[in-house]
Structures are given as C-alpha cells and as structure tokens.
Length: 81
Image 1 (tube, rainbow, N blue to C red):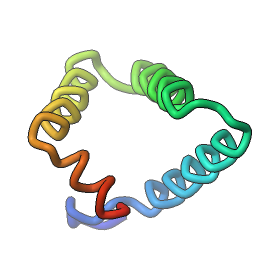
Image 2 (spheres, helix red, strand yellow):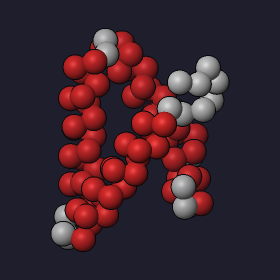
Image 3 (cartoon, helix red, strand yellow):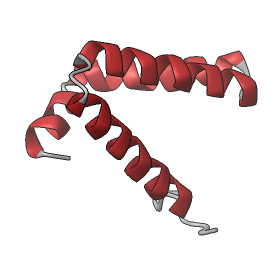
C-alpha cells in the first residue's frame, strides 16, 4: 500500500471498474438512472454503516454535499470523468 494519501489504493480502481460495468448493465436493462443511483447509494450506505462510525459517514456525506454545492460534481460529469 502506498504512503501517498493522494494515490488511491489499487482495489479502489478495481471496485470502480466493477461498479461502472454494473451501471452499464443496468442501463442496458432500461433501469432508470434514479433507480440505479438510489440502489447504489443505499448499498453504499449499508456497507459504510457496517464498517464506520456514524460521524465518519456524516463526514463523507458532508464532503459530497460540498462537492455538489461547489459545482465540482457537474464539472467532472461534463468532462467525462
């Protein structure tokens, strides 16, 4: 594992690729984007709740909210990343 906190762990890249494929599959099954996102978010929250304290989860959610408010989320989706 790298000591550089800016370098994501290798399993993050793998997990991201698996999620991308799952989204691609569900989209191909004509599942709505809101249903896909809601299912992924719900599953993510359940997983986090089994491995993190509530305050840590709140920190993650607050970071996500800050990204939305700053426009960073839309900037990434428009650039294709």
